Picture 1: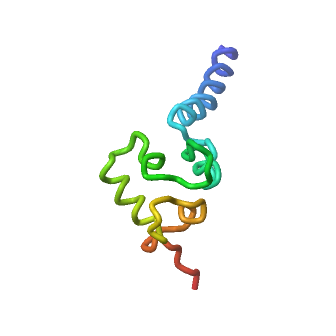
Picture 2 (picture 1 turned 60 degrees about the vertical axis):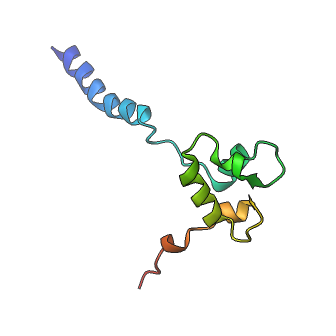
Amino acid sequence: MKKFAVVAAIVALVSPLAMAKEKGEGKPKPTPEERFKKLDANGDGKLTLEEYTGKQDAEKAKEHFKALDKDGDGSLTLEELSAKPEGKKKKKAE
């Protein structure tokens, strides 16, 4: 009976961790630099619309790309990709 209690305790501790791992929880979120490097297929330091959209919903991705492309040059720099969208800036704590 003692062995069963130990096994049950181990399963109770490990199961939530295994489930979280399957869901992708617990993984560190990629940094903007890592995301940018992964998307920059040709390594030129800029993201074209084609590199940015990849396999995403094309229309939604185009809108997002245009919103991020602050200088309107048709490509995204790391700074543009890293910038917080206008409506999502954190409010200062009062």
